[in-house]
Length: 254
Ligand code: ADP
Ligand code: MG
Image (cartoon, rainbow, N blue to C red; front, side, top):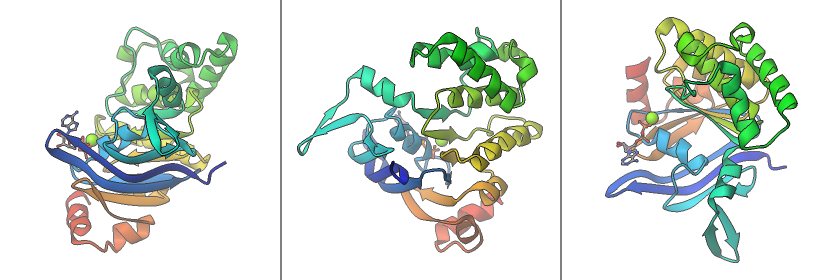
């Protein structure tokens, strides 16, 4: 068992002429919470998407729990995995999106059981019990038969978190999970994420919620222009940033 759960080395990614990631190194320890901050367009979402091979890197490597993501190494050559193997890897990497991305025609419970049944082919009764437990954990035991359209944004995002947990992921990636929510609904979602943090779930959270970062993060990473500008414990990065770009960003969001 590797102490480093997510390990990015020298990751470069361009879209045509646009260099979006310019040599990112990032290591996330097992059981730790890393919060990524940075201005819009700095490459945060692209970085998260490389972790589960939704974006292929141009160079560099991504490992999750010691396993190369998207590729198999043979000697000094890399071969891209087949779609089926990529999907298998992806089932162990949870992803929670800004806009929830629930299936609108499925109930909360059906959304949570869908992937464990279809992608992991686990027994229906076991998955059903797990889903009920997870919906209870995110405070939605009484809404399990509701459709997404009948739920508030905060409730939908909590279903999305339960859905991610149902795959028993090695790491959960959150891409601005509260940015689409009305302000009064942000707290209930952050409380669920805090609960996961306390229970030792490995997470990478892209957010502008500085208070959350200060309280929950083991490591805060500041990105700008496709690079990690600085990283460290929250007190260091948030209160005594070393770089002018970090200071300037924080002065705008605080
Ligand atoms: P952030 O999440 O920090 O706002 P992103 O990773 O979403 O940044 O985007 C970084 C840059 O890459 C932006 O300029 C964005 O427009 C561009 N970009 C992201 N995805 C694509 C894509 N699929 N094709 C072309 N450009 C993209
Ligand atoms: Mg983004």
